[in-house]
Length: 528
Image 1: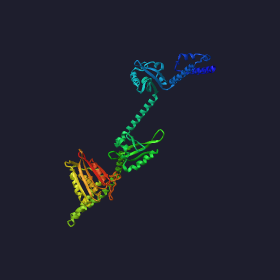
Image 2: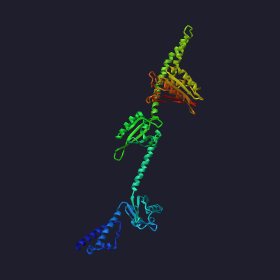
Image 3: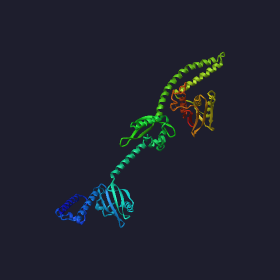
Image 4: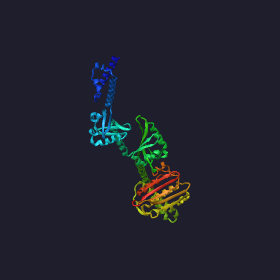
């Protein structure tokens, strides 16, 4: 039994000796008795028969394994106590300690001011004091050697009082660097998104608007919060089906590129847009949202329309010039012979007067055709706008009665004189009021209002109670040869647009189906 026990002690001593020799960075501190045992040869170890000696060896091995583990762990473990009002470190080790440019010898038994920059000691001591008062404290530190670490202080209680504080630290330098890079990338992306002129929105798969950029708010006047409740607010009702179909396609991973359609602003105005929809994927490649990039192409569309109408007007002008020239030649002869017949007292003077009147009317129509062909120099004089409107109403009263339509006027007093070409404005207002009457085949009321638009413009509004104009038709009004009338030519409203444009004004048309149409003519009072 004695030999067997002595053999076990020899094996334990050799194992302990090998572990001690492998330690690189920590000195072994043992009880004097255990240290003496280590210095003995294996033969002498057989003489040790006390069980306390084996316990001492086992305890020493456990202590050194723990110290070795602490020294080699990637982070930092430390302890401190408050002695005579000073925080003294009783333990500090770990690989993070070396990265901070410190060693255990530089820290253990010392207070913060012995190894830490003076300008940061006060803040650290505040953390230490809070922990000593019993609070668990966490903080970040990056004051030494360019290393950033996250530390946690936990008070250890004995008999209801804090006996010491144990702390741990984790190196988060790379994490903070990555975080800074991600933050910079995010800021750059945010800056790019918010500086673009296109409206950008991030839409979840359940149809909620998560985020929008500044251009989106500028173009539509909607915010993400306002649209989150109902994304369909900025989509016209007639386009709901189209929008749902596009979003469903993108939700399955597809794309929609450059689709031209309409969207509604917060004030109800419809604008032309080009939409590109793309799926947003997560790290697993799953579609988690939809990116919607919307470009306002209203100006481009108007420019295209202007170019198209300009081309049509050019063709009309050439046609009108030719037709007017061909009509005027025989008219001249007809007018001359009619005047000769008028001098003959045997002819019926009444019939001849009617013929001359109609010939003059034909001549006036030809002049209007020439107005399309080329600009004409007209003499502008000051006229009373209300007088012009009263003449128009008087002229069309008979036609209104025939159609069971009542003409109502609402004129502001104190209207200024307007510098204009009277017969041209009269032609415009006749055209507008006549269209309003014809829009109500079952009768109704046409209201003509005249008043101030602002301090530099006057406004004339013609309001009917007809069936209204569909949006697709409304957008094309004023185009050459486009008409909704069975016998119309599409030139009346186009000529009206040109006359008002030549007077420095504009025409604005609003219509709602089954409620009626309002045509507003806005004219300047200081410039024609």
